[in-house]
Length: 163
Ligand SMILES: [Zn+2]
Image 1: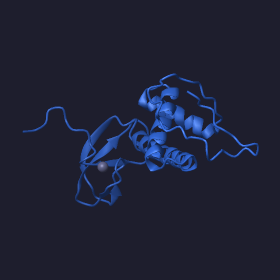
Image 2 (image 1 turned 180 degrees about the vertical axis):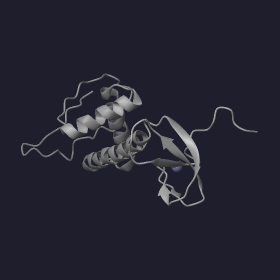
Image 3 (image 1 turned 30 degrees about the horizontal axis):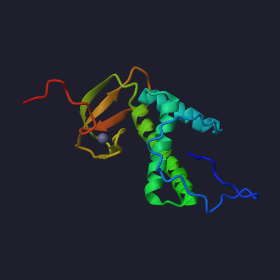
Image 4 (image 1 turned 120 degrees about the horizontal axis):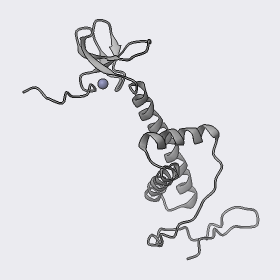
């Protein structure tokens, strides 16, 4: 199977080159791909990998596979595929970062105390508005800092659910 990308002398990709259309899906031979990434992206990938408890290389491969699969569906044109892949990685990064940030907000919480909201606030996890009179839970930490509250949907359910 020829995986070489045909290049014109000016460096542009030959439009007649047959794009890798996935006809070699059965070819599981693995290759090592080296790439440079900004330090901030590397740090993010490592954080995400730690949070998901997977090796960084697995995470990167999963993101790339997802991106290419999405790009495959979007178009068979090489350029459009690459653009779509890049956009997908960008979106995925934003999505993962948002999810991690939400998790991190409540990472060091020791307990939740049921409360009645007195002043308008927002759920620290899903950002749902908390209005005075609403049931909510106060997140208790062992260090000083601003109080955070979670809505009833986001508070962990008690082990012994009431009848
Ligand atoms: Zn919530």
